[in-house]
Length: 100
Image 1 (cartoon, rainbow, N blue to C red):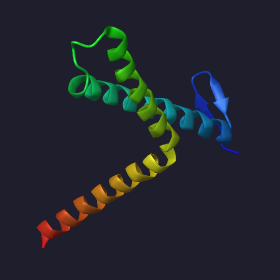
Image 2 (image 1 turned 60 degrees about the vertical axis):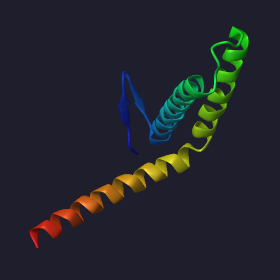
Image 3 (image 1 turned 180 degrees about the vertical axis):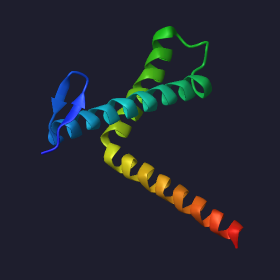
Image 4 (image 1 turned 90 degrees about the vertical axis):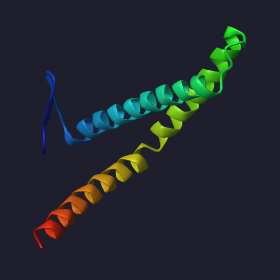
């Protein structure tokens, strides 16, 4: 049985996987919420609007986008893995083409 050291704790495989899943979920939520909030504030929000309306119009879609990214984290992780694999394959192919 594999044991992983995280800080002062030793975790089993299931505990380690749960912790990694939690980190992906929080990270994707924060990235999605911040980027969405910035883009909405930049392109949608009118500075003449009341402060409460600007806050609601910015925060509500940001939380929704962050939630969706966190909810589909397994699919996003798979897509990132596929992107890295395709990058490695393309680099290997380009090196082989240059050698020939």
